[in-house]
Length: 425
Ligand code: RNT
Ligand code: ZN
Image (cartoon, rainbow, N blue to C red):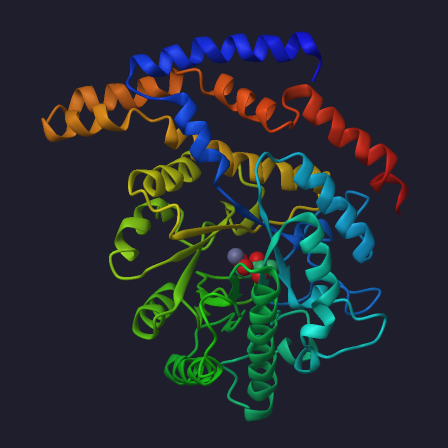
């Protein structure tokens, strides 16, 4: 940032600080707290969920789909790491990286899902150490011939089920290895695509089979200092419109009964249902929660998040409950219709901005109004909060974190595209 615009950001921030102080909010303290918020950036936005199992690997099946043909997707580990470094440089703060099993360093050999091990992720661990990043992990139960039927862990055929169980067991082992190596617990999240296009008559067997498979998978215990388990539900997918084995009811009940973490993906609920509302309910009974920050648009659950009401409510509820240390924030979206590094940066920025807005909420005043039954004043203040100079505080945060904002931020993404990713295809 040029000297004069840095000075302007500083000046505007001083005025903003005064405006917030007037409603009882300490903007400096909000920025201090924001610095500690860490997001887990999902590796799969960089290559459209392709992975590196085969040179031509691409997302298939599983009820998820990437659309768009913007050039420049990362084609190998080096390109992906380079893009990630660029993305991280555009996001203020210290964050984490979320890997999927298909992103192993397989050295050009075909390693099947039931054969992967920590050795395939050693180079990621080394890279993460160098970059100062913690790692999270996911089993990949899609884009594979043995998932083509639309069923994996809940498959009635023992052979198929055993294959996927072995995969997930190995993924937990890899997660523990990552957590141990990096000295920060690795969250292993499990999402499976299981379900059916049309109405089944036997929901019962699939859910019983899934419950038993999970119990067997989780029989191996790892220290919470190394790894933690999360299970992710879904409402429907492409080809699983009528039935999803791992529904929200299923996983919420499973997680509570078995002491696991539930993962709430913001795109996996009915459109009028709010993930923000669930935080204070689930955390009465569970220690921790994993969120997949995403944006549902009609049938798609994986659009790039923006600073919308859903995201704002979610972060507000986390901040109001003072549970930032119990809620893990992972990003989960994929969009191939725009610059991929830019998509990462926008989604991460929206998540952090929503946290900042929540931190800048005149909490005390609002609470007192609510206590006093002043419903009009509460609503008026909530509306007024929207007009407070939040952007000035964000810019100051970026300035302190040495991250560009505004047009310079967009231009940097365009520069990287012109010099690097546009030359790929
Ligand atoms: C799919 C789930 C899942 C995936 C990733 C790639 O609907 O949201 O989290 O997006 O595992
Ligand atoms: Zn998800």
